[in-house]
Amino acid sequence: MTSYDAIIIGTGQAGPALARRLAGAGMTVAVVERSRFGGTCVNTGCTPTKTLVASAYAVHMARRGADYGFSAGEVAVDMKRVKARKDQVAGLSTRGVERSLKTLENCTVYESHARLRSAQEVEVGNEVLRSDRIFLNVGGRAAVPDIRGLYQVDYLTNSSMVDVDFLPRHLLVLGGSYIGLEFGQMYRRFGSQVTIVELGPRIVSREDEEVSQEIAAFLGREGIAVRTKASCFSVAKEDDEIVLLLSCEEGPTEVRGSHLLIAAGRRPNTDDLGLDRAGVKRDKRGYIEVDDQLRTSVPGIWALGDCNGRGAFTHTAWNDYEIVAANLLDGAQRRVTDRIPAYALFTDPPLARAGMTEAEVRRSGRRALVARLAMENVSRAYEKGETAGFMKLLVDAETKLILGATFLGTGGDEAIHCVLDTMYAKSPYTVLQHAMHIHPTVAEFIPTMLANLAPLSE
Ligand SMILES: Cc1cc2nc3c(=O)[nH]c(=O)nc-3n(C[C@H](O)[C@H](O)[C@H](O)COP(=O)(O)OP(=O)(O)OC[C@H]3O[C@@H](n4cnc5c(N)ncnc54)[C@H](O)[C@@H]3O)c2cc1C
Image (tube, rainbow, N blue to C red; front, side, top):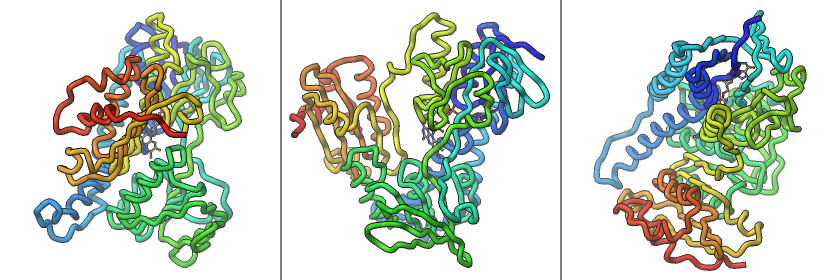
């Protein structure tokens, strides 16, 4: 048995940074990774998808040449080269994480599946490691719904989809949320026919209704078919086609395509981790239960990143690392509940969100003010010829603190940070309103919008 001051299982977004901090503080650290270094974000999530989104955007803009005064001839997409570009970008990241861990002083890397044997012991292949501090950063994977016939067809998930090097003739996407919409739009732009099938009454149903409508509208203009209130209960293969049978109120009860992407949520990698042997509690969906400082039910074991169910993003996993490191090494008292919900959906244009949605503000019952601005009134947007979307800000009528923001439009994923930082500073919206912003930017319209705050109607 080999003893360490700390054992980290998983090299996603929290583990490697934590390893660097702990090893830098003089601790001996064991890091265990069973697959590719860098985890989901680097290999099958953010990095590959945003690299592919960039290719799809370039294709889209080339096709719009006439709008900008040039002609590029017929645009031909070579999916092998698109994938090669993705491999190159993602490869740099994964190799960077691997190299940094393997050359880190005080750090030993194990490449194997890890399972807890007890509250202080971890089985790694034929070895047993021991430590009083164990950090679980095991992430998650695509959830595959239990649909009749699904296991008889070659379906894709985000993991296999990022390695596709051909153009599907007709891509069926099961799930109209963040992952499904990003892939759907990019493949439409590459040239596939795309049908998105969503169980709920609207796509991205966690967002305000007007957000779902606007996204559905711009996807529709690009020729993407969206089927909502459509529950897929059976999948079959007929010749070279995949057939989805739907239970739905409107539209055909059958959709056919050449390929099927499952984008129906995520599940944590906690089912083969030996949690029961160590006494670490999970919730009903398999997420590891943690307190506000990310401590599990067992002293000396922490859970960070997607596996704790307290976030589903790279920035939340990274923030988990910051919280745990600061509390352990700097004597801080940082907490998960100190962070403000923030994320983006990287369609084009992107959706950026901070704080509460309008629906959440309404449910909270507080008196609020709201300001809205269509992107077609934002000079930067019309100069760029990208006017889809709108911006919306919600403010507490009494405290003047910003409650939430929704920026659906070009540049919104960057401009939202003005709002986010004002919220973190706990400053009233007037601070943001009085700041002089740079022209012409999307952010310069935030003060303009704030001048038009009006009571949120009943
Ligand atoms: C298609 C897609 C697009 C996304 N886009 C974005 C985006 O644009 N922005 C954003 O913020 N987030 C995005 N995300 C989410 C983001 O990728 C995750 O939130 C983030 O990667 C979570 O990191 P993590 O540290 O929790 O774990 P992961 O990155 O999932 O890493 C976990 C690691 O643990 C390893 N592991 C698991 N079990 C064991 C074990 N028993 N033994 C050893 N090793 C083990 C795994 O192999 C993996 O390497 C996206 C996700 C997907 C699927």
